[in-house]
Length: 388
Length: 104
Image (cartoon, rainbow over all chains, first blue to last red; front, side):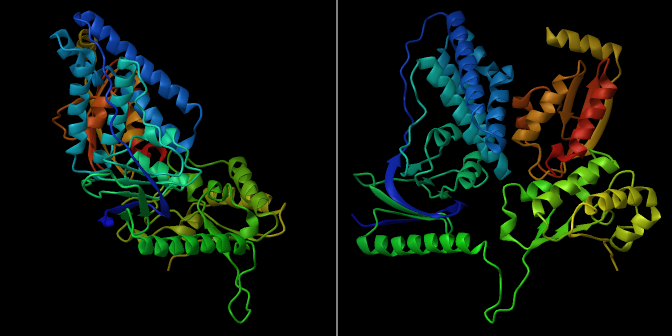
């Protein structure tokens, strides 16, 4: 069989090679009762069961993944999602059929959205639909993906993604899908290459056994010729070697070819930016922006709040130099209660150091907090933002 | 039943309206919708939102309905609120939108 080249859109970077797992929707059979009241009760129980499943899953994850699942729970707990289903159930339709009708209409609404982000939510609603259908029929319909395989499907739900083990490699090749989907976010976070929008995955006869996924270029090759595979394996090896070299070199001092040392300084906007980073990878922090402290929701921060945050950053740096820029408000960064509205040229207006000098009561608090933090560090410097 | 109470409330309390521009990157998407509806449910007032000052109005306590609005970044979100804690509810809605739902 000749190799099949498909071009799609890159959704998560990286190269992968592996056996193909085709995901096809599991069809569950269920015997409906003749009684609309019983059918409505069955649907209610299935929705509650699905929400409970996801709530259980949330306990095992954090951050972005938890947000994705919390969205699903919020949708399931909203009676508006099942309204149309209950209506057709009362007209004598079975619960599973009614639920599928209602959710397919919801999914069609998302698919027709102008905005790619909202179109990508279709996969979440499919996930919700299938999980409730699984509860209605009492079978497991979340597809199991074996680790290290290339998943080929029309779309993939967050549940199916989360049920798989991505630590052993593997990748995703989708006929549809979107780089804005929750699965694409998950794939990027887990380092699984992903290509979407390949178009219909149709095979003459046997489905493909092996695939090469290029999540950088957005291409997939099914059943490659030996020569194609060999060249791809060379690229994988080169990419792995480059990653290993980058990891090994990240702790070495930076210098030019003729040996002149170059300082590598980070540029951060909040203390979270350095969380999880080893300070040994850099020579210090060249710029800490402090605008994050002054975001509208928090109001003007007091001296102790600022001090605690500056200390945290200095402690992370373990004696390496840190330069903290005083508040750069104004221009494109208005701050309620501090900057001036309606200036004719705000970019050269009352901003940066000029604003700080005009509003010394705010500036003084920041300088005091900085001075206190710096007094306990060998290497802190402050510079004001000057716009000329 | 809910609707009976809501219409009674709207007779007793005047409608308060206000609008704010969606500043967060992808508009009123999944996470902001959840945040907004959770916040709205914390108030007794009837809270509705729309993309135009004349509606159509959507129940701000329903994530399913709020997501159906598909409000993109840069859209102006109009709120219409009525109830005993209407003023606080309106202020809380506006603060969430102004703040980019905490993800700016």
